[in-house]
Amino acid sequence: MDGIDPSAVPSGPGCADCESANPPGWWFHLRRCAQCGHIGCCDSSPEQHASAHAATFGHPIIRSYEPGEEWFWSYPEEAMYDGGPPLADPQHHPLEQPVPGPDGRVPPDWPDHLNR
Image 1 (cartoon, rainbow, N blue to C red):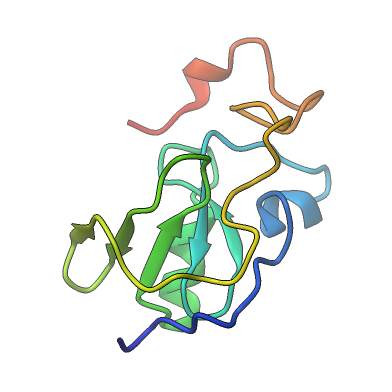
Image 2: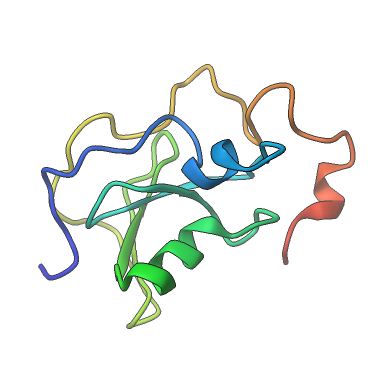
């Protein structure tokens, strides 16, 4: 399928862009670029890095990077798919990582900062 490289490994355990920001940010849920493995934060997160990555690089498909979720999203089709090819491990962020995360950077009033 165009836009999916099953051999691309995830860029890390959290949103690569939130981690590299100064100061570092936080996220609600994580998404994985199915083409290059970039981990970005979801559209409910304050910075929406997964969508920004897709728009900037033209990578059309993401997959959830949350435990127990295996769905894919196609930006061009604006459609969700319940399955797809297996991707390189790991399949989700570390189980001990809280949602929202990461631990220690989430403001107490985090629900007020979500995009709806």
